[in-house]
Length: 147
Image (cartoon, rainbow, N blue to C red; front, side, top):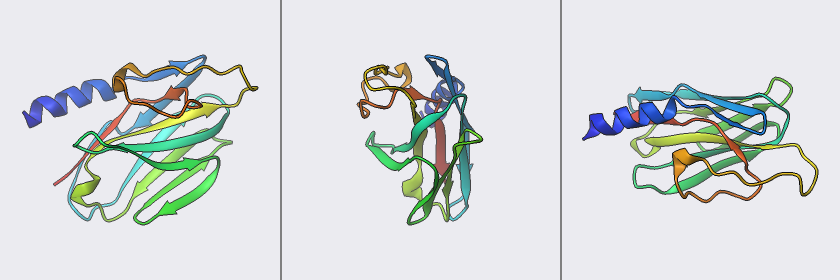
C-alpha cells in the first residue's frame, strides 16, 4: 500500500500548475529523509506575486498553513521560509526533521492584480481542499517521508 501511495504521489507531484499565465513549479517532488536530517523545498513562479503561502498536509489529511510571506524570511520553530520576489522563488527549509514532518507540501501564490480582477481557481490535485479566496495559483506537490 505504501508503494502505491508513493507512486500516486509521484504522479501527482510531476504536474505543474499554470493559471492566467502564472506558472508555479515546486521541487523536489519526493523526498525520503532520515529523522534529524535537514531539507529544503523550492517554489518557482513565473510572474510578480503579492504573496506566497506554504502548506503542509499531514498523513491524516489535516491541511496546515505554515507561512504567509510577501518577501524576506520568516521562521517558526524548525521551519523557515524565504521568498525572493525579484528572482521569483521561495524556499521552505525544514531543520532536524521529525516523523511528524511527513506529508505533502505545496506552495500557493497570489498574483498582483487590481481589486475585482482575480478569480478563485481550484487545483484538481487537491480535490475539495479549501484555501483562502485570494490564492489562485498553486504548484505541484512535494511528498516528504521521514524514516
